[in-house]
Length: 269
Image (cartoon, rainbow, N blue to C red; front, side, top):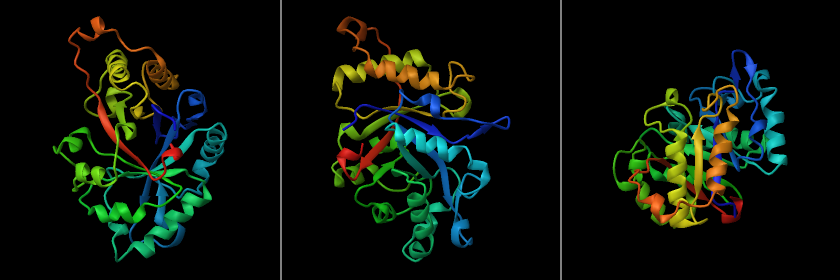
């Protein structure tokens, strides 16, 4: 099992008309999260599934899929992110509509050899929708905000703590997600603070925690022109020796946002 992991979200595939290749991430990450897949109610056939604004087969992704295959060839697991802020995807997976809208998604997963799906639920749904998608030999991850893991604020409408207990979740399956750039959302912390927090987690858990990752790749700091440097820094922090007890008493409070990982097979990670 790979632990701790380093993951990176890859949603912006072009910048100023130029392809944003994930290949420079090789050697630094264990998992690439390809975002964002959506299910479109009312569409038919392959047009049900979009990757951002286009069908996955659109020429817009002509350079994306070969890069994805190369990443997988070098051992990186590629996970599709399903859902996110745009509403409606999980409405398509209700009991009444599942047999209509899930098969095109399953076809995309198989056609593009995705290793799993990240279920980013930001609408009120029943946990039954999640369990319906679970299957063997396939990585399934969930994406609660950190407060949802302590019975606090929650975007998904179901109890992640109870759900995690049912699935026998452990610290090895919890991954902390950081913003790679303050323009990507609220709660940004810089790499110095992130490195310190990672060292504290290494001190407490050794290699028995899930890892760390970033949202998102294309504009990662410290240098947007070389966005892979963020992942390089995370990997270096993961691999570094923990802080000493004296360093840990400095009073710096760790601040990370969490994502909750759940694999159907431990070895899949």
